[in-house]
Length: 588
Image (cartoon, rainbow, N blue to C red; front, side, top):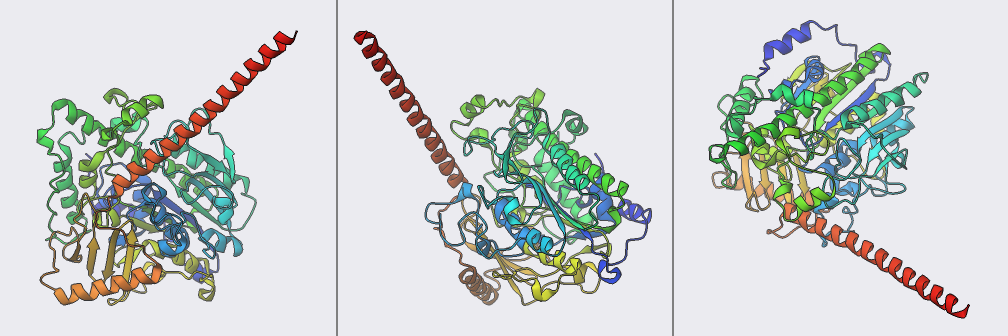
């Protein structure tokens, strides 16, 4: 197993040339590359102690800022909306994801599932400031005319409009979708017969850059990967690097990540590892065959991260060869914590798999035609030292990596509390856009991280600033070192709890009884936030994963009805043709 230590990062940093001067001082506007991992955990990447080999990301982290208290939302679309706008998800129109949207919220203001009028993306603003703008990867922020990337400021784009898709073939990954729709510059496109998603995405981004290489204008490149979303798939040569890395199971990996997080200074030395949820299976109670399959599933996961990093390395090499690397600021982060879903356990899913060319065999796990996922136990382990995972507002769902690297960024570990809405204003700051022009019809929610990145400040938010987040009933409010959180069923109790994150990042000690006045005040802060942004409250028994199953079933019924109606029309036409032929022959 590869061990990542602070000394290695320091050595890499000392071997690099000096960081380029701040663009604000030089007058040369920087390029921006936003690399978005799908469902990546806080400690998945090499600089955060992960098992996967990530030399490109390691290099970028060594020459930049590594954030230890950056937070996103618990689901992908709301996070993507906030990354691209700097605006709270409810004000963008993407309060949650279509797959978990209950009927009671559908179509309401803030819940349209696409950018609503007055919401400007960072691409729109940068394009207006003379930037070239490109996107390649997963979109999931609306579909149809006006709702794809070309309608939101991107000059060139290759976009998957769904929440995910197969990485080897152009086909859906779950019953919610009838097919996997990709669009280039707003028009439907057929992908190559042979491709792998991470390679395809970087190929297209490099193509866009090459096609415009004579244009001296700076650029924005938004690269939302499919890695490591379900189906978790990777080329065999990468998976084989981790053939025995996870053989001792999820409990052992969870403790190792917790200990490495301490060794790397990501959490306090006395931080507790939160207790394991009773719903999770025990590793030592699994059969030898199950253990082998589970270990291989996680090996593919690590292989998918390494494959992604290798393709990021191809982009970095292109920028180096064309003399653009030293003037490029990279943002590397994840949209939410690790994915806990186990689709195969859902009724009817194996039948759906067989109809769509999927199987789950250990020999070919992660390769073409394979349905792979890591499930709740590995997701919980991957989230260590945090609690729980994607969908939920516990730290395992919200606390993810953020690396910022490039000119004007002082190499450091950044402990400052920061949020997904802060990336867009940070880009505006480094691009030299007048702060008076940052706000459009819908004002920004986030704040620029530039003062922290430049070493001019040690915090972005004041100690008394209250910052809220809500997606699908999962809610949290941060204030200084404290957090209150409401986690829905089935992994939470749908009650509010209070934690002191500075000492207890794993949320092992609920303080609501010990500090009732603080708890009450923070609940009032959350209520004010929810009213301000337009949160539509859900019942306490709301279960986002149950809602996914309900919505997927409705989609299948709709698809079946469409096919049934189509078949009936064909049958009527055939009967009509037969009657006409018979009458014609009789008349003769």
